[in-house]
Length: 167
Image 1 (tube, rainbow, N blue to C red):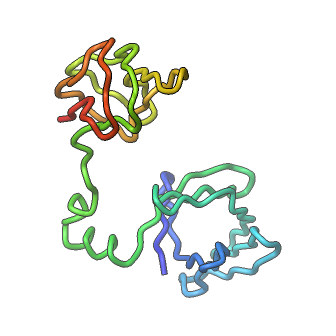
Image 2: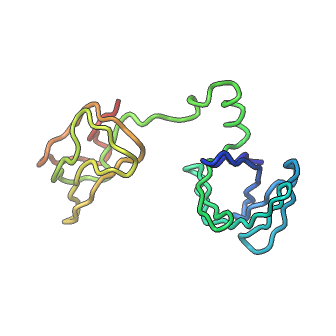
């Protein structure tokens, strides 16, 4: 069973089955759930009726995208382990902080797109790496602050070589 919390403060429980199907919990107080399609449900909470569609679920990101009453919403997914850590005030321990960026392949550093001290959001461009005559923009896998840049434009790098260190 997973607790789902949205940015609007909405919270409910559901279970994601091995085949990717989603099953809402009928145990929520005043909540009646009926599946109306493969990825859609009718939810009655108190005197309010809602139609919920599953847009996508990303287990690794712990994100669930639902359309509730025609409005797309992103929900944070917490399993029993994360819920327990949060209750104990230890939720920050469950997140691994990225310490460095390593070269995903051997290649040539063409351009550095960030500077030391920059704060880069998830998906922000860090550098351009040329490999097999193709330029690849290397992007940040999460929100990061750059501590040091370990390479310069024109440097040849090997796979798993440290490129950038983060704070």
